[in-house]
Picture (cartoon, rainbow, N blue to C red):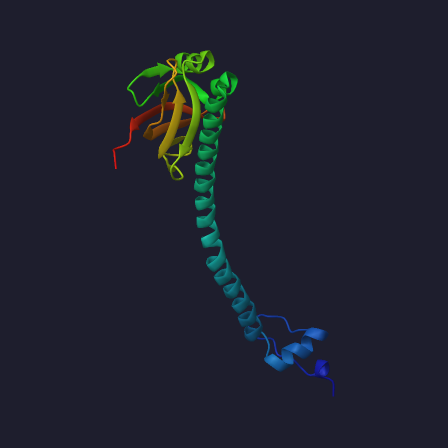
Length: 192
């Protein structure tokens, strides 16, 4: 006798299986066990989603923050290279219109004064190097504070070369869809 030919009871409003499904239903029961199997699959899928989607959502937040921090560091590196090259055009793009640049001597310059001093040769940076990778703290997605310790060598107009080690704080903001330096402050590092 063929299993498909056996009578099948209607259990709980579930229609009796036909054809190939009839053979499977007769070996594991009809109705409830079939729903139980489907429920088990649904629960397993829900568990898999909870285990893998939650960490991925957290990882995306972490990745976004890491990406923003990396963008700030890249912008700062670009600023450093532009200063070494006295590239007025690049600095014009990298600094906000109201940027304030305060040197370790206490001299403060606005954007135009700072760029003119570099372009005119009043200062010629020869070395700008962080002692360790700078740290970046984010305040939302459009404001960042970069801090670090930097070794500097700058040729002065009188022919001397100053070689201070300074602690820097740089405020970066997003303007015109890119990171720009809004404020910079350097202070002589304490003697060791």
